[in-house]
Amino acid sequence: MFYRPPPPRDPHRRGRPPTHGPRFQPKDPSTYGPPTATWTGTEARGRPVSVRAWADLHFADDPQHPITLLECARQEGPDTKRHPRVIWLLWDSTVEAAPLAEVPDLYALRFSIEHGIRFDKQELLWDQPHLRTGAFERWTDLVLAAHNTLVIARPCVQGVRLRWEGHADRPVTPAQVRRALAGILPKLGTPAPSPQLRGKSPGRAPGFRPRPAKRYTVVRKGRRATAHAPPRAG
Image (cartoon, rainbow, N blue to C red; front, side, top):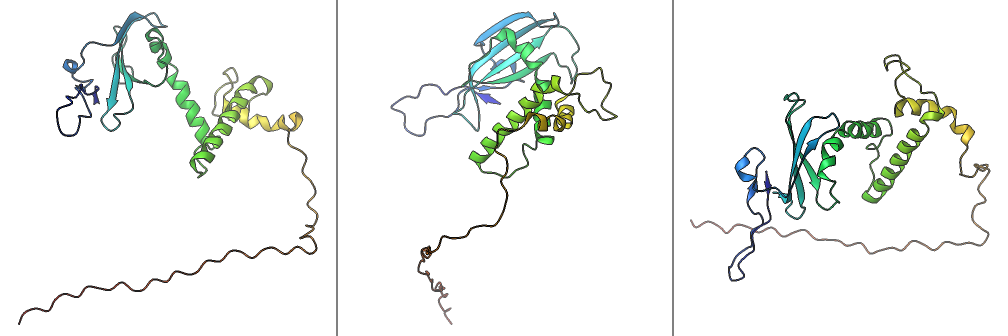
């Protein structure tokens, strides 16, 4: 369930101002109201489709984050659970909205996006390290760079296919490129300097005396006094 912005508050009214306005329930058409924008046309397959948008909505638990709700309805085609005629989409209002004419075709990219996220988690170990927020953001950038490297290296290698991964006439997947990338990495080299010999550590310089670590006094706490119940009257 979604909610619209609250109505203007009377300055002379006391109490807490309202957080939500009228509700918006996709299952109840009586709560829709007039849409913010509409579009009617055909999708990539040539089937008629209509898109309606309602802006300035928010969730009940996050009233400070506005969203735009989109209804994409097809007049033709199967109406099953897997391929419904009417789908509801969410768009972050803080991001520049795409034209409504591009929404039906943009949703078709969802399949590749979901498989890309799955590949990053399973093959590139995106969610495996336990890092702090800043370090995990840098790790995410490294995973994305590795993913893009595999996509760029696709025409340079012959993907290693497992026996159950289909015929050779299908396009090479990033996972198959990753298996074959070890053969060309030594030829490409690395911008990092060559490793140095380990040798023996020279140790501290003669006459160096490190300062002792700063010590703090131990804080000792006494036992907490327990309150005794008053004696009962005999």
